[in-house]
Each structure stands twice: as structure tokens, then as C-alpha cells.
Image 1 (cartoon, one colour):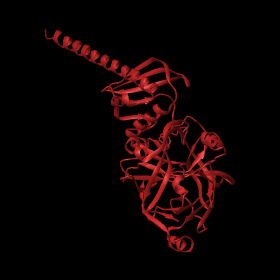
Image 2: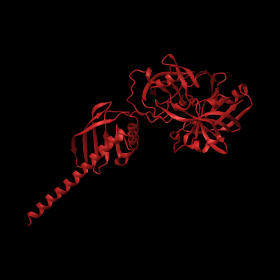
Image 3: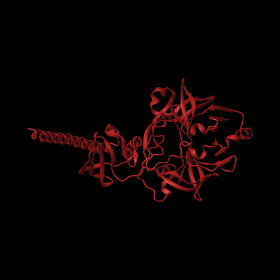
Image 4: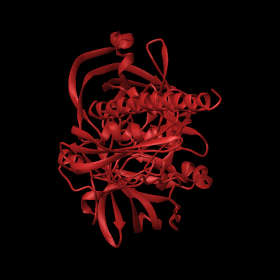
Length: 419
């Protein structure tokens, strides 16, 4: 009996271990199947509970990795048509599954799923991919000219300016709604569409096809950046819409050190050193003005306005052809509008969305009154983040900025309408 009992116990222990581990493998296979289904549904939400806290993909780990996965699933624009288990490598605290996968567009590839001992997906490699990060704003060299007068032309209702890019004069859009400089990847060598971005435009489209590229020299009216990394994206759809060649966007990071005066009547922008503004104002601007406090939500200057008996916050964006209000507010504000209809809205992304349109009867911004303002309604929840001091309810664009001279001062945190 003393000999048989230990043998019996050992055999029983091995049997129980094998039984539990088999159940783990089945759970892991179920997660693999669930992952491919989620990819085809273009959302990773259904597998978030199956991810470990230290989940990793493409060299990223934890919360960042989970965001990369969400972007990948929503923007891949491909689907899995077949998958088959090729091998399972069992470790003491993990199990690695290798699958052959057939994508509709990408074709055949291998995918690897690594699970921890709790059956959670610890690491995922669907196919070869790279995640690039751009954490710092570009460092600009200020112009020696004070103030800086920038002539512009309108493409429909958007401001186009001349920029010297690597020694050649090119046409860019001035888009204060863009936080960064963006180059049109159509005109860059070795550009790729196999890139992803978390950036969204005003119509809430993902702006995919983005990459990070090196620019040797970019000169915007004397404001210069040299040998730095910037974002690139395919802007072909924007060019087709405007009917002109666009080599890129000049965003907030190039003009953040200046007061910005928009003068649509004379088709020029004036960039003013904030330290010299008072002198410039006395010499060049009239006393008939409305001064408003400015709230910065990220890089977006935001002002308070009144529509009916309610208060709203609108971001100012020179890259908006029309005013825009968050779609969820339409039913609450409908009595303030006329000529209600629908239209296709196309922003920085390739897709267009059908949205409600209307004419806002009137709105007050500080002491300034505006009437009959063309307006679109779209989801802008992506503009509101927890760290922002105010919630953005809409966007002010050409219909407001073009009616008078408008100055934005990030340093003094004020917006001034000049009449």
C-alpha cells in the first residue's frame, strides 16, 4: 500500500493538470475566433475583456497597445475570410498559438497569439506592422519680419497660402484646426497607405494613411522648420474637392507664437508678435471692436456664444468652410433654425457623411450679433477630452471669420472682432 498510494496520487495529479490545461486551450481558441470576428466587425470592443493588463502589439504595451488595437481594427479596411491553427507551443505559464490567415485584400499571412496562464491575450501579432509616434511639436525659427503679412487666396472658402518646401514654392491650406503641419503624401517618395492614425476630422472620419516623414526645410513667410519630423497624409480627396493641388496644411504649431489677424476683405493674414500688438493695434486697427475671453481646449481657441437663451462654446477653425454644431444638439435647438435640409460633409478623411444642414437665425458672440449663418450638424464628441476646461459644442469657420477682421491671441487669451 505504501508503494501504490504515491503512484496513484501522481497519476491522478497529472490527469487533473492535463484536464485543466486542455480547458485553457479551448478558451484560448475561443478568444482567437472572437478576435478575427471582431476584426471583421471593425471594432475591438468585444475582446477588450480578454486582454491582459500588459497586453502588447507592435512594440506597444498596456493602454497604448489597446488603443493601437482599436485603431487597427477600425481602420484596416480588410477582412479575414479563413483561418487555421498551425501549431501550439505550450509553456509553463503561457500558450502560443500560430495560425495561417487569409485576408480578402492582404492575402495569406501568419498570426501569433500568446496567452498567459489566466487565458488572457498577452501578445498579438496579426501581421508585420510598425507603430510610429510623434510626441513633440516642431521647433520653429521665427521670422525676422515684424509684423508678417501673408497674402492668401480662397479655394472655395478655405485659405490657401504659399509655402517654400525644400526650395520649391508650393500651395498649402492654412488650417488652424489642425494641431500640426501635414504634408500631402501624394508628392512624397516611398509614401504608404498601410499606416494608421487616431486623428479624426470635423466629420468624425478617421484620417488614415498617415505616416511620419522627415522634412529638410519648410518656410512659411519666414517662419522656418529644418530637419524635423512631420505628419504626412494623402490629401488627394481634398484636392479633387477644391480643384487645385495642395501640398500640405499649415497648422497651429507653425503660428502658435503669434497673434493671428484674419482679414478676408483684403485677403491677407497678419502675424503679430504679441509683445508688439498694442503698438500695431493703435496704428492699424480701429477702436470699434469687441473683445472676448478665449478658452484653449488643447490647441483650439474657444469662445462663448448665446443662441436663444442658452450658452454654448464654439472652437474657431480657419479650415472650416461653414459653421458646425454637434449633432446631438439639433433637436434641442431646432426652433432657432430655418431652411433645414441635408448635405454630404467631407473633411480630412476620405469618406463623406450625410448630415443635417440649416441656417441659424441669429447668435451672439460677446457683444457681436450674427444673423443667417449657414450651419452643419455633425458628431464632434472626438474634440472633447477630459483634460479640456470646457466642452466644445460647435465650430466657427468662414461664415463668422469673413464678416469682419478677427484677431486670435493665444498668449493674452482673447479674441477681438474689429469693425
